[in-house]
Image (tube, rainbow, N blue to C red; front, top):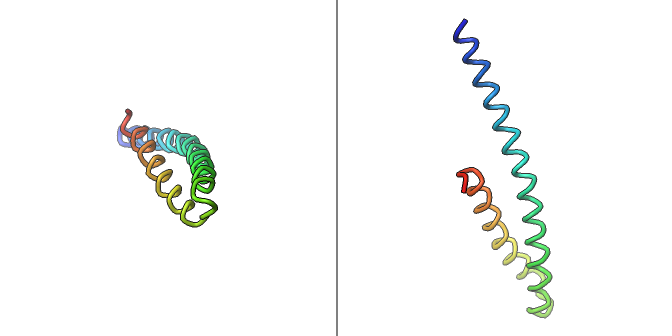
Length: 77
């Protein structure tokens, strides 16, 4: 009986953690879009229209920021 109660408790913890991570990921994705669009617009205006190079550069920069933000959220900073 105690094992069943412990199993249900563990399942509940996993479900709550899953919903928390999913909610956090949705918020961070909006941050990525905002970062990418702003970066790309600024880069294209400065580099006189080199769209591909700007896209690669901004993708790398914003992915790094997004990953750092996700890690800080998981770690609790």
